[in-house]
Length: 83
Image (tube, rainbow, N blue to C red; front, side, top):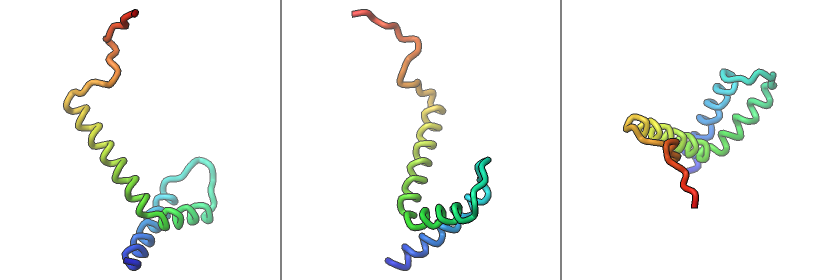
C-alpha cells in the first residue's frame, strides 16, 4: 500500500511540475514556488485525482445536457406573478 502511495506521489508531483512550467501566470514565479506546489500536490494526490475526476464528470454531464437541448434552471420567458 505504501509503495502505491509513493508511486502516485511521484507521478502527481512530476505532472504538476511539468504543468507548472508550461502553464505560467504573467507574474514571474520562482522554481522553488513551482516545485513546492508540485510536491504539495504530490502529497495530496488522492485529493487531486478526486478533484480531476469530479471536474471531468461535471464537464461530461454539462455537455450531455446541452446536446439533449436541456433548458436552464431559470426560464427567461417565465412570467412573474404578483401575489
